[in-house]
Image 1: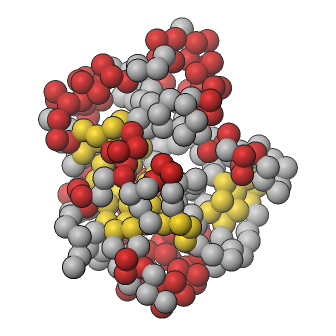
Image 2: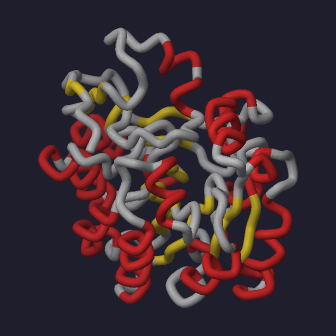
Length: 281
């Protein structure tokens, strides 16, 4: 597990207006800055705002919990902001980073939203820790969990996601969430090497939908932020997985197994909130 240094801080705001990639949402919510999951393909680590972090440490070597996140969200709720907000949590960190187990900042934000439901909420994570908050998620009329599952090959998962929960644990978490009545998608983002048929068979019984992304469309810079991961694929003899369009074959397999209506792609797929249920009047 990553030994990231912890830098608690008081934030000035907790909801950030979206634009660009997440145009289907009105706000992002980041209870933490930084991340403890040291994924080898992470696009966020290459963003300028992360490279120039105030701690002088590489990405995944630091994390800054926003200790007043629930209080800030409660103030926004009191102003009526949440009633029309479509919230993506989170786009530049994992809301269930390991530190969340102790600090419960994401849980605190969910407690606020349970009292003041947003127009829509999507939780994006790779951690089964989200299961802890099923009871709160069930109180939200338009909420879903998007859990990252990038490959059915555990050796590939360990190579690119060494500090993350196993694929088996994530698939089990999706099954438990869905059984509890929570809407769920698997974010195959980015698609890593592996048998797409096996991946489709794992996901078919446990998800409402999947969204597929690759190293080129998903990083917001045409693959430039993914260069280190692309070079790793070449070194591993997996060069065909480093070429634009490599995800097309796997996406076709997923559509055959899951049905075309349950498979979305890249930016358009992430921004579609219709699967979270009908909008409130």
